[in-house]
Image (cartoon, rainbow, N blue to C red; front, side, top):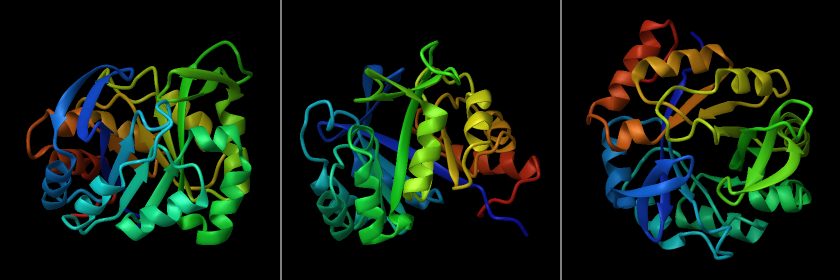
Length: 255
């Protein structure tokens, strides 16, 4: 029996509410994060990811109060990102009930923070959130972005994924900023390209709009699949439908 593919709803949080847009713009309200977390827990999601989408751009701390309340409602692993800058931030998140912390902007600004966090807590607690766009600025054609996709860095996404793995991140959350919110399917070429450069678990994100979009992402190299719109605005049984689609394609899933 192989390792089960994880199905992960993503809750993008802004000012205490879950929001969702297209390419991180034109955000619309999707509900209360604690209520949605409890709903996904009951729907048998394998994990949950909370991303505070404006913490870095606003230079403020992440949503510790929301994390604490959500952790009381769910019994599946919880990853939290947005505004994570130091080992102290990770420590506080873990104390609030998070299982893993996700880092993006702070790691791009000062890559050594990856070493500091994983040396203290182990690589199993740290997820690199890699928001990438297709551009002509890098050798691979994929460029790292920060601040919720609003800032181009000039960094090659494939090289950055490899460096982050070497520094100790436990897994990589790969989000296609071009596909994000479009509901037209994952960026399979990007997933395959990153998969060729890293060995750590890879979470595919960006573009899912129907259950049939998920198996190709796993075929391209993803170990887990993450989505927002299809779960927030789709039918209540959307998680079960995604798992059915993965199972029908021959992949192990947690029932």
